[in-house]
Image (cartoon, rainbow, N blue to C red; front, top):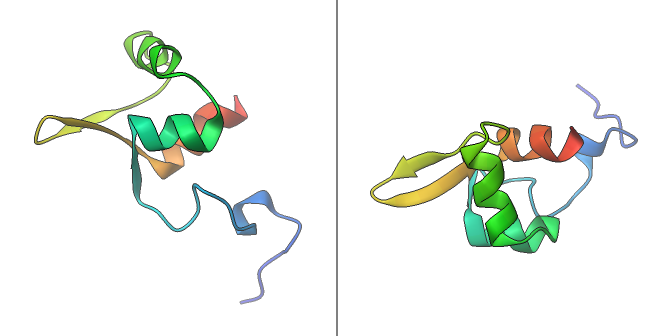
Amino acid sequence: MRRNPMNPANQPGPLNGRLSLSVAELCAASSVGKSTIYDEIRAGKLIARKIKGRTVVLTHDAQSWLAA
């Protein structure tokens, strides 16, 4: 199957190739502050999960949130 190079999902970037990101990694990748990330999580606009006390965001959820 050929990949469409014009599709943003096929472009290399900080979110591609990862299953999940920590809040700090998402901040660095998106240039959005930590407080804003946590506000979006509390508001239900960004889906996050707790794994052994660490808040992580699935890459798919991060991309969907950034596209909204």
